[in-house]
Image (cartoon, helix red, strand yellow):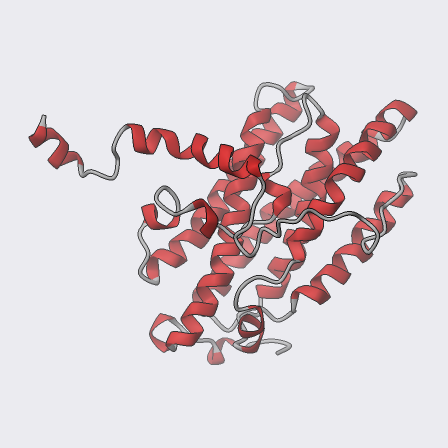
Amino acid sequence: MSGTPNSERIGRADLSAEQQVALEALLFRLADDEFVHAERLTEWQIYAPTLESDLAIANIAQDEFGHARLWYDLLKRLGYTEPECLWERDPTEWTHSLLVERPFGDGDWADAVLRGYLYDVAERIRLEAVADTSYAPLADRVGKVLEEENYHREHAVNWLERLTADDDGRGRVQDALDELFPYALSLFHPGPREEDIVEFGFRTEPVAEMRTQWLETVSPFLESLDLTVPEPDEVERPDERGRDGTHTDAWTELYDEFTATYHELEFETPATLRATEE
């Protein structure tokens, strides 16, 4: 499906049960990646190497939370509640990539910058593949997200060029690349309903083609910085896949952290009921 004219796009009322299941799988992947990526980025606030970069990383995290909200909102229109999307959802039901859940290297700005670049290039490719989606409410939101993601990618590119300008910085970026690359490949692991997502036109490119585009973008750029990009077929990949609900131990810890306040304050109980009980 090379493109979907507006007149051929469908809305919520037009979805069959099978189409809705496929659409939900796609939306959860989009939303989960953005939300978890943003959660990790907040760990860098006040710790970035310059005031400018500190403000930038805070803005990027805020943007990513906003993008996640856009996708979760579409899921809410399909019948989900916010707690079902976020706070009360079992951690094994999340389908984000392993890259975004991975803890940062201790104080390693090269890790944050490189991770942002690998993720943001993949996100651009993925968003371009849903720009011509057959689902009208999704198509209406892609442009805004793409525009903001361009800024995120430019920030990462500028910092990578800066960090690799000397041997010490280039060595730190290389170490980060060797560590992160196997996890970055999980961005393109086929998740549930992958064939249906493409068949129904919700995304116009399969993950295999997006992976090729990603490699053809990131490899030449990183090599131009005198970095050695691992061979995808030769790296040792983690047993977990992310998209299928399997995650590293780091995810369980992060999940417990960002859901703790919700459960401690009993947000699942309506405020009026709490007041009555008290």
